[in-house]
Length: 496
Ligand SMILES: *Cc1c(COP(=O)(O)O)cnc(C)c1O
Image (cartoon, rainbow, N blue to C red; front, side, top):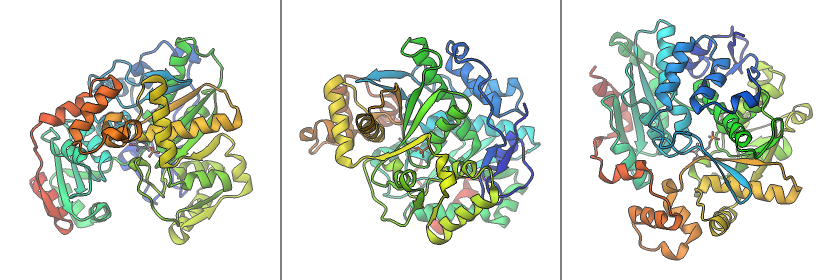
């Protein structure tokens, strides 16, 4: 079956997967969605014996139908290789009754590696398929994590360059070191004098600057974006949910057809949407538990049908979930309207104009697959500590939110369905907060790397290579620019 992609905000003619990957966002501001969700091609018992790469092919080939088998297999092979520190790519571990799906074994030890290690290859292939001769220049503003994950994915991928801007003094010391030591001749990082919003605004301006685009074009370059609404990031995330189910089958924890629940620590709603797509493809999932921190817009939305961003923004120890506009939710809204782009556009317009929207009762009936829940800092830390004390297993503060929400849900409802927790970051990435949760008395006066050593002792696990690397890797990127000088900096890096 040939799958085409249409916008959530207009009835413009649908386009191929490769065209949607190249565009990222639809020109009308909508997100691309597949016209139909394909079903799993084989019974789960057949998929259960496959390697991660083989399974990735089974899933992705159902969506990226204009890619040849050779093209897609090559993308997969280049993505899921020794960049990951385990052959399993996404191992599932059982601790204290729950199954933690470890999505942090890639180069930046967080789950965004799962999609960002394949997106560059999908993009270059898409460019070739669509007759684009220009080199792709990825432009990103980052508050810390996404920029690094994107750079790690694009580093040394032929036919691409990547430029990342981050707020000077606005990221953690470890995040800064991770970016400043980035290898790859095609990578460029600059700190900007300003905050994340300044960086983001300037990047958006460059994307919309027609004169700049023309100048780039003359020199054989064109901008593209690697942000999380790209369908080329969403689809690769479906794979690991099916893989988790397959691992449960192979190890005899469940039988074919048994239902599971999936809990996801959520920010932009991309990761949990991928789990929902897995369910729609036929994976036996009963509940999708959407876990939020104190920025609980989504919890309220699932409880009431009102999405309201007009509330104070709170900084928490799970910063990648500190989000008030969950962009990928638009794809769910579109589905709930019965794929009505006019209605979806109206809701999104309300969100922009009034800061909120309320879905209809009919639409709310379609939300039965989801449960929303949130956890406070204290609940998060207590959960991390309790798990550590019972099992010795250490989770990070994002996974901790899912852990706390999930365990509270099970206690309240008595639901005993086997449950997978999307484990989105290595605890070593958030060592200070994690040590603060499990051994606060040992926290005082320790440097970043001392905390990492301590965590290594406490957890009995070796620090990941991503950490070892930044202890000694040379700093390659030292540029600091003003926001208004960002275009000049971009041109200088591109040599134009
Ligand atoms: C990005 C991120 C999340 C949130 O994922 P979404 O797809 O944006 O919902 C959760 N945890 C970590 C560690 C992340 O980096």
